[in-house]
Image (tube, rainbow, N blue to C red):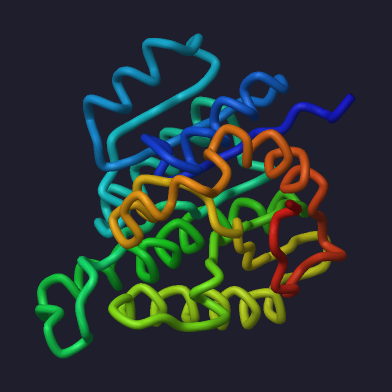
Length: 229
């Protein structure tokens, strides 16, 4: 049986994040999760016991992230595993048709938000001497496609930032860029529409992805990985 872990996860109101929350809780782990949706976080909190903590947080807001990490540590302790999952995708369009506001918001969530979580959790994990930081990447962080250039840029950045971070961490810690593969998520449907329906659902994906993520350790640090299947 897997040793119970303390897990922080962002972007857990739907899709892969919500599927991972359910899989981890069902396996006996303790979670602190967040997303921007107050109704979704309230709904999730109502379904779970008070060992877990779910809060509405704007991951691009430095003060909000600092408060969330502080409250989460007070509630469940310093995490053994942190999953930066929160991300948005641009409305499909050529790069020259993407507004400055949309581009900047995407960068603030997909890249700067990962930094803000890292900024607040890594010193605590370093102090405890162990921990795994998983930053969700994408196939579009290792390849490209038309009409999603901002999203591709953000996931390529996640790959580079995470691999560089892995070089900086002390022994016992890990930073890993992890691609989930192609999954039928609300985000994918924003781009592919019904074309996403031929792929695995988030819950099916999480049934293998959750134990795989739990198996990651310092020996995997800095490696660009993809969940099985």
